[in-house]
Length: 142
Image (cartoon, rainbow, N blue to C red; front, side, top):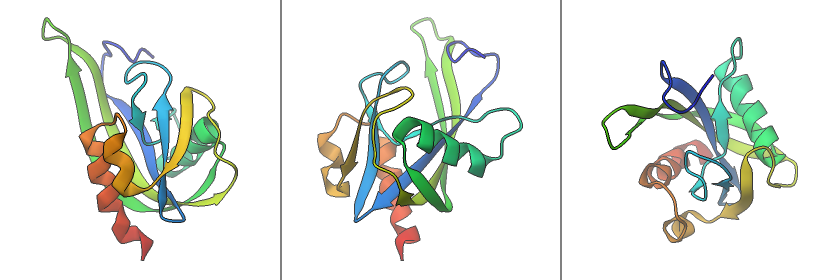
């Protein structure tokens, strides 16, 4: 399955993982988004439920075990190249989650990981949608 110039949209899975008032962020280690800070996650695998895929991706990318709290947002991310062709097309499903166990460490395709206070997210090189879904996910913390 190719991520660049795909034949159909790819399903991306992510989590807004909360621990002690901070959110788990990863700096992407490869395209698309290399060097950008984002929520941890990755692609759903064939035959895998959304919940199982999110837990797997978070564990692979950060070494952290999570408890899923609920659906926060579904985001369409479509990028076109200079000629107008669709270079990337992801349908991203983001869930709120709570840290359960594990020390966060960069794994899989993450270049770095960090626990970040929500009011510090604007200082990172990140996507505006990331900040928006982090704020939206706070309702799951009560």
